[in-house]
Length: 143
Length: 209
Image (tube, rainbow over all chains, first blue to last red; front, side):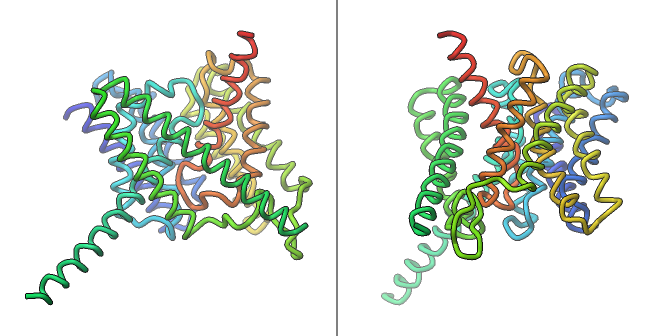
């Protein structure tokens, strides 16, 4: 498996697990995010042999950042959108990490950008579909 | 008077929201300009800015209470300017959360992820004892927000007292933006990032002068 695929997969898992665990078991979102991230961080700190050394130290970071996406409210974002946000986060994480290196909250702002971009794509898609349906019905009426 | 305070609160809210968008755009834009050709960078930044603005406008119109001033209003619609006890607890817990995370991450050399997540876990312990207690219910949020500040590296925030101060500043932002971006993941991290960058660049500029 390539390193970038592992990072994206970790991000999707981090976001999805936090969202699902906190909503299904009715656990506080902060507790869920902290507990899952802590478990992953401890596991990769003491058992780092499963993946390549380049990616081992990035997995807990990506998981923690993605778990912040999973902290979104159910009313705001759907399960599928959480998965999509996780993918966007994984991609942003791989390219933008170097720019916020050392700045606290960098993962949080990346998670926020991922969620907002997902919502932006969703709304744009809905608007475009609406316009397309409108135009399509006008064309069929004319015919 | 009431209308005036509401208007000024809305203006401050918009300024804060604008600065959040601006920081995010600068963040992405800088990366794109350094890593791709001018035209493609220009186009992708424009697309991303468009998506960000669309997303933000959706969030604002559906989920945020932007009509509320920066501070909560009382029953008569007047803005409350003074910090109450709950706000002070939030400020101090945010500061404390950042210092403990920094201590675990840098001084104990366990790393920022273990630092922040353990602080998040510790902050949830009171909830196990008293589930219905309002203060205990609200406490983990500012502490977790502070823990993001504490994740900063030692070359950005050099000592634990600076971290505490930045944590206090993040607490102020947290208290001030309670009605903004509700339910959006990464809100606490964004507050932390804003406070860390503002303090870092201000201190850098002041030291250089």
